[in-house]
Length: 162
Image 1 (cartoon, rainbow, N blue to C red):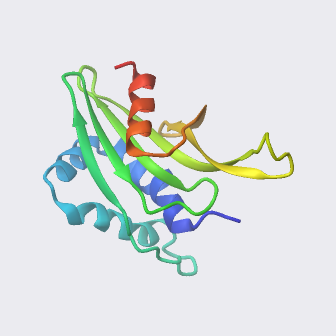
Image 2 (cartoon, rainbow, N blue to C red):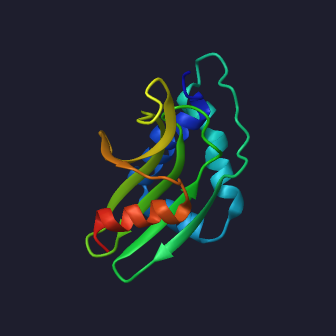
């Protein structure tokens, strides 16, 4: 099955570009505790991604929320997405704002299926840790199970070495 356009394009295109194009705006705006802003971003996807295409199926932003983790050197924005249903849909987005050099790193935790070693004819749900640059998708080949905020944050911290 194909991922749902709204879900897929929010994490892999719209929000990613918003973060890389104007990280300070995203960080400051979401930090201001404007709970509606992330939902407003969510509803922009169909307007921006497919303005001339047949209408995109709108997914309600159930479960969409965010939180911050701050340290002396890094600020991490963690976005919980609506529950992923299909492969490549994202469970979490993690954006690292590095204070010392003002760089951005954009991570996702994406739903995938892996070969079930015990039952060789079946596949099992899993989640894979990925990083995006402005132009490239990098599969970091780390499976994260269970796909929780805590396990995702731990993977991010390990990747950025904090």
